[in-house]
Image 1 (cartoon, rainbow, N blue to C red):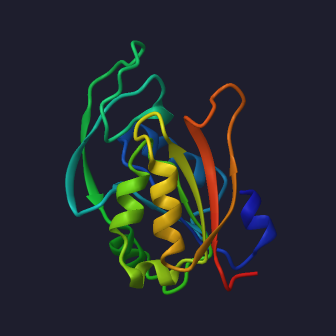
Image 2 (image 1 turned 135 degrees about the vertical axis):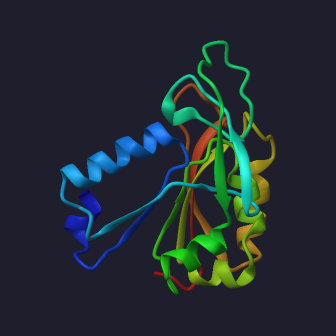
Amino acid sequence: MYLTTLEPDLHIHCVEPSQSTFNQLKFNVESNHLQNVVSLYQMAVWKDHGQQNLFPGPSSGRRSLFPQSHQEVSGPSEIVNCTTLGELCEVCGETEVALVKIDTEGAELEIVEAASAETLRKIKRFAIEIHEDFRPGTRDRITKHLASHGFTLTNITTPPNRGNALGIMRAKRSETR
């Protein structure tokens, strides 16, 4: 909602694989009369097209394509349809993307590394939640991969008491101001 007040011509594409979370997202968009500026897609972004198991987490926002070892994990897994970042850009009809925010509870490495050079050229900025606890080395691999495609790491924010296990990585295309 905040972004729509800053940029009136902005169009937001939201991807959510979980049925219950997608229903809540749809309700929020409709309740705030954002249907003209927000498009919703019930699917997961992954390294390839197909279906994957979406495993439960300790909360709805912690569901993941990777099984979790948290003792407080509850609920059944669900089968979700998957698409790639490139296919998503095609479905959205976008030739230029101002920002891609990735919060996929561990799948960020596969998503970024599977994106073609053509797809990455469409994107100006990334904000990626990094899960070193799921995949040690993720931060370095994503940084190197994006750098090889013309992106510069602008910063990494980590929450207190989490060390490098979790963080938000921001990167921008080098020629973007």
